[in-house]
Image 1 (cartoon, one colour):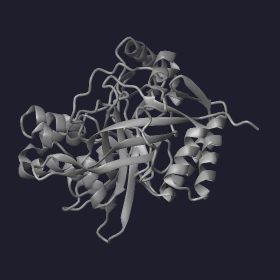
Image 2: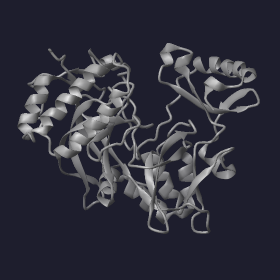
Image 3: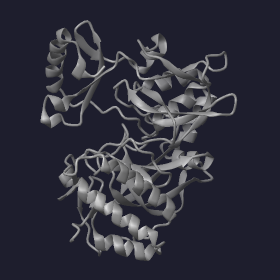
Image 4: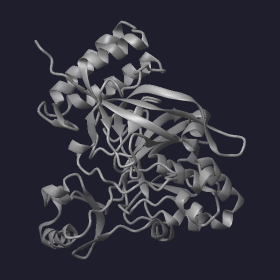
Length: 417
């Protein structure tokens, strides 16, 4: 139920509740997050988009030589362009000290697509981008490098019907869940949302993971059933995935909303409890630990009170812009600070598992990316998430990735007609 269509007798009580909330610290957002958040990042010092990027001099700019294929970059640009075309032409996008309109962003996308038509060399494409765009580098409390993690599209066993084998509910968005935009009440809370449900005339927090596990979801339907709750947990963490049905077909599911509870990393929990070494934390090591200790699964999963609700997808996974994310081209960032849909360049490493179980670098990762997604654990300017796609390699790379990196964005220069 939208807050805009609350019945009149209830609206006043909800507003009173909101006035109390506005006096409290801002609640976390509700998007899916990437697991694990293994490193404790420094205090977030950059809180405004005007300070999140700074102009980059040629002396400090690395070679912008793309190591991917042009077709995937073209596809990602087309999706950003499609989203931008649906925005008001004067919508503002903040690139640090520069402000760009949606119309200028569209012009930039058109130039990029035109340059790609010529099948350029990495060197010639980089030269065109530097000529046609202002280059800005991300600013963060950790200095020049940031943490780059990965996410992917999991494929897990599931069924449309509840059976003895498939008994873990995949919940759709509950009908009693209310999402309130606090920006409607105060400009300083623009982009911040509050999620809950009504109890009488009071807006109260939505149930936690434990409460939902024990009592189900009120007035919410189950859209499918999973075989393994750990598998489904990691689909929640990634934000989307696919259920491989008993007949071999697939049912794709994507993020529809959440219970609004704060995301808490189970990787961090297992580190703090001394169960897994900090240097060895990864999705793979977490899964292995839970498989060896099934008696701890409930307590570990319940530690993360956040629950993701899903909707059925008819196509590939979509990001927070509502357009498909492109494997090895889309990234997730904090959209409060970095411009949505914008072209970026990522300098990082391809992760691999070393002989001692720790993550090592298998080679460089240098490519143009599009800022098309966000996540609950992606906060501030010291973190970005790289979308690896689907399949075993994508799962391996995403699960291991916790690499240092640098991130640049490109603000289109005005077109002179």
